[in-house]
Amino acid sequence: MVLIKTVDQIAKIARAGKILRATLKLVAKEAKPGVTLTALDRLAEKMIIKNGGKPAFLGYRPHGAKVGYPATLCTSVNEIVVHGVPTSYKLKSGDLLSIDCGVIIDGWYSDAAVTIGVGKITPIAKKLIKVTEIALEKGIAAARAGNTVGDIGHAIGGFVKLNKMFTIKGLTGHGIGTALHEDPSIFNEGNPGEGMKLQPGMVIAIEPMVALGTGRVKQLSDDSFVMADGSLSAHFEKTIAITTKGPKILT
Image 1 (cartoon, helix red, strand yellow):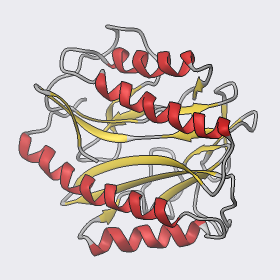
Image 2 (image 1 turned 90 degrees about the horizontal axis):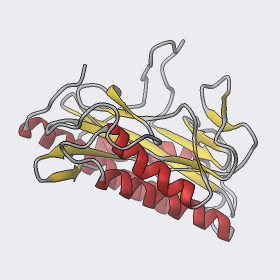
Image 3 (image 1 turned 30 degrees about the horizontal axis):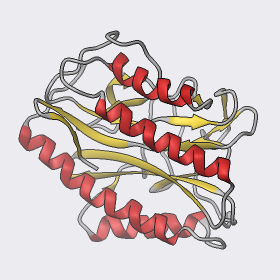
């Protein structure tokens, strides 16, 4: 069931989004060669709590998970697409790092992600990051009242395909608000006019995940998803509200 949010409720999600945006900016700035993923995770947790929020991922237990998630961030390096658990791994020049985070304020959730290059990265890695970021912008532009989730997927997938890259199979964006994951699922491929119609008051997290390889993934024992062929991947995400005046970015 899709939950329609009021203007006041969307404002509360935006408060959580403001803290999240600042946290991602700080973590991205500190993600340098030699820095461990656990150090970045501690930095994010302190930043969120200092500003009156709660880490949305810490302890989160999706359906079917045996234990709660053990960290504030998902830190996914290179071929890891999403849900990479922070470890003592030290970042190296040339790595691609996806930083995914969520924040709760007064029971309202926000979710966002960015991918950055660590040190000096290759031209194709730079292009992968840029294509994924622009794909998110195109998905957001299509997220207008009266359009459908298929329009969002078509905008994202079409741009990725145009650049001879691949959207990740089986991983999607989602609704968000009173929980981290709500209906509807937001696919990164689709056909114009198909699927659920977007209504004012819907709040969704759009998150293109793009790879240089085939787009097929496998799930590891720690619940992270990695590219089956070991190719590089990138991930961008923003929480947005559907309004009568167009999409409103909340993170």
